[in-house]
Image (tube, rainbow, N blue to C red):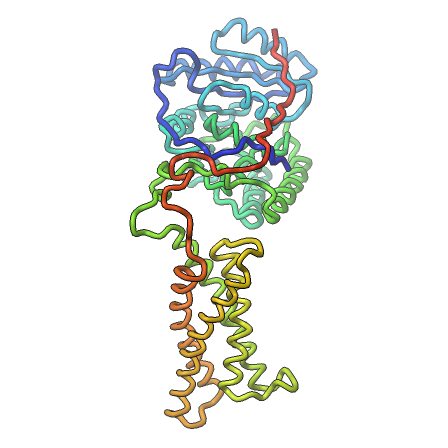
Length: 450
């Protein structure tokens, strides 16, 4: 898995002007391998469509990846005859390799690609790239699975497509609807930082690109498309599916162990209203609340289990304790686990620095919870005499809920306060300091067709 991405946060998205004369705004790449029969028809039709409907400057790039037929000759002829067409030749096969190589070297601010069979209706091209030109989104994809899409294809490919996207949603928590539609676009500055982390060079390239972009918090725009299946497609469904599943496993493992520096792809503060530091509004409150609640649920279950074991004799010599002793012991053990979990998962504090101090402060918070729950038990004993274990547990749950609210406030403001300055480097659009070497990614070899 590649990690040699250029460091630094992405710049703020800007609206691209139509009057750019020195370079095209859009570069549409058509990756091909042995497509001598369809290439000319595709390029001519695409050029006519763009020339008649697209209000910005454009380029069409034929990316020939190791064709062994007359495809290079057709591409060279098209380049010679149409001013907006360019041809590139790669000596290694792989659609992902072709796209990454051409996109990395392109000077256009918006990069797109489509399959040579033109299965996707070209009327969706302008809606695809418009959010990228306007600065609204980072990537855009055509979706055959959106409700407004109109698709004509056989049941076999329909099943494979839907099953694959279901696998992505269940295994990688993907939220985009169609990973493999050959109709996508990306802003150039996003591609420059994201592509070096994409390892696949084949058909899984699309999926890997989208998963990493989504995990990095980039905005992906989806466009419903009209799509007609090409019955003569050269894609081998079984072998492609096997390679895709291998890719899902590889990417999922890399994400699970934190092997990718996706946090460095975040947009600078101020580019998104949700990122702006507003006076009096603490940052990250929603995420911390969710994390605290999840930890709290498991801590409560652990507490109730320990309390039942201490009261019922499940721990041998230390079992059969009275309600107050059982409550104190169960609360102490669950509090230590709760503080450790919240330190790591809720407030994102890592390493061993101040860990002992945090646990000591957590024990003070535990003392507050102990006072609340013990006071509730004392009040129950005074009111009911000898209550049942079920009644004790019910009262303790209510008391723990009240203690939980106070615990969160104390954790957030005292134990794990956000000590970062209000106007840090990211607030001014500057990248966070990183002491690692700023290496340049190595690109695939690419040769221009004369």
